[in-house]
Image (tube, rainbow over all chains, first blue to last red; front, side, top):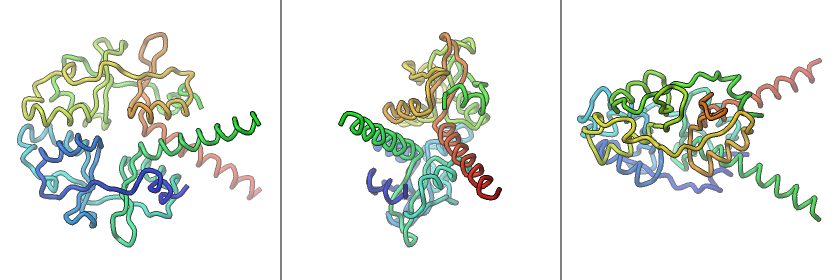
Length: 142
Length: 142
């Protein structure tokens, strides 16, 4: 299965956050959207970085309370692994495993067109298994 | 594939943390072990709860700096989804998707014998794909 199909099923809407947002605002938005990471983009289309719950937690020990006044730009990952619409889910799983990343932005012509999480990948695999089982059951019972 | 096989490949060592540990200590241990969640256990064998980066980040907005002085018991999830050694990876993937959990402790006779993350599940799938490809290549070239 291609990434384009995963996005077709999950939707291509990507929540972005600006680099200037304080970490306090980031924490609120992660909770509000029920996600573990957000794409960082100044204009909603470019990819400036990615920022995750892990980035927050890892810096919490060092900065303590003061962390909430830092900005997203201070803690985000700038060197982001990305994928394209024509890549396969198998390739994406290999990327996630080898690079130990859990969220991969999807780019087309350099513009952000989606975000795939490790949860999306596993959900898609389960959906395939369920479809196969249903087809088999339908075949057996007819 | 069964969960027992996943643990055989990744190892069954589980890092636990006590409920009385302050959140500051939790944050240090998550970083030290390079993981996103720890099993909470008073004695290293019982399962008292699970605590993740998400539990920290979600409460950070509400408590601010004071959060670091709270304990693991204050923020952990007590009602934990678990699996057994004889469960399959497909069943675990379905559980992770339906319950939106990313770490599932493995119990045998009520005792903690492992922890499987969504990253472990995806890594295992990739390993299976690679083995199949290698076998196919070996078959073609002989």
